Length: 218
Image (cartoon, rainbow, N blue to C red; front, side, top):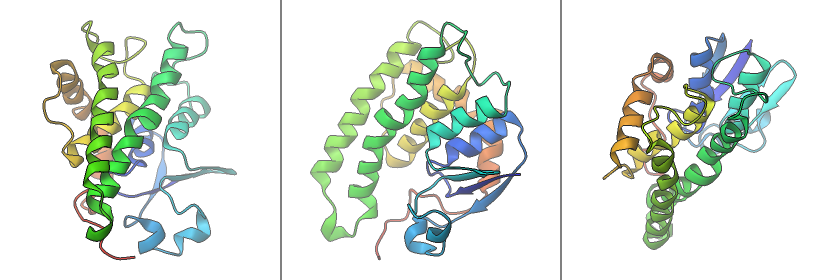
């Protein structure tokens, strides 16, 4: 059975959401955030100390966007994958990695320098700069949805929407969701109403999110 190590609302939510969208059986291990600090024995399983960790037989993965692609391809066929013979295959891969590399990267620096570091190590100017970086990159999503399409590629919901959708979830927790363009606001409403999204939120239960609690000790 697939096993997933997860912190509530962390990047691992992408993997959890994918599992629920695909209806795959899995075992979920919920950890406190950040696990490398608050559950040190996790380092024995994942020396990086990061979330997610997905184990599927002999396969071990720690990159959230790669896990979406792996599950969609290895455990397909599934409509959340765009196959190499489809016209939007390249666009699918691009958005899949855009969600993490272009959107979530600056968000994590906002999270760190506004909330996670002890007060004396916080960097408000750096956090503000990376918040603006995120907002400027989000314009690409608005342009992609600007022609009235519901989803990013292939005229259907895919793993690309999971990848980008997680960034929108994280943005809400970080206060980066003010003044969203109408197309993005409507897109978020569609994403967050999906049964797979709601099941993933339910699966992580009432565990504290990575977002509200500042990191005050090491």
